[in-house]
Every structure is written in C-alpha cells, then in structure tokens.
Image (cartoon, rainbow, N blue to C red; front, side, top):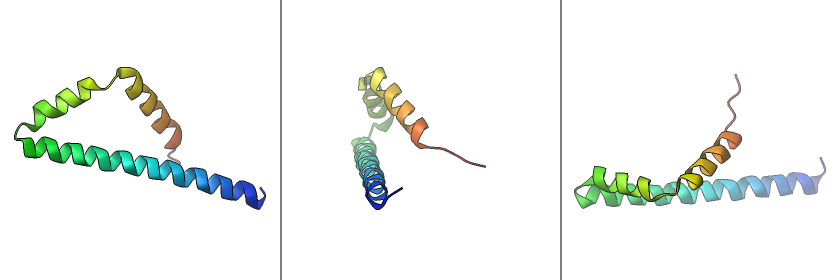
Length: 71
C-alpha cells in the first residue's frame, strides 16, 4: 500500500468511529431522558418500536461486518 491509500484508509476508519461515537452519545442522551422521565421502560419500548425494522436490520448487518473477533 502506498501512503495515499493508507491515509485514505485511516480517514475512513476515523469517520466511521466518529459516526459510531455520535450514535452512542445520542443513545446515551435518550436513555438519560428515559430514566429522568420517571417511566423509563415505557419510553424505551416506544423508541424501539418507532425505529423502522429495516433500519435496525441494516445497522446490525453493518456492525457484524465491522466487528471481527479473532482468536
């Protein structure tokens, strides 16, 4: 690999990590709001049901591809 490819690869990895971090921060804010609302279970269930199933499936597939565990 030449330097340009390495840099491009690292930039893509950084972008992906930043995107995942933003998603985690958003979910943490939602969980905090759920807990502070006084009825966390109901709000969490509503939020999960509001998400379209296709989006959840695509997200799961994306994570499965990104996460590789080697033994």
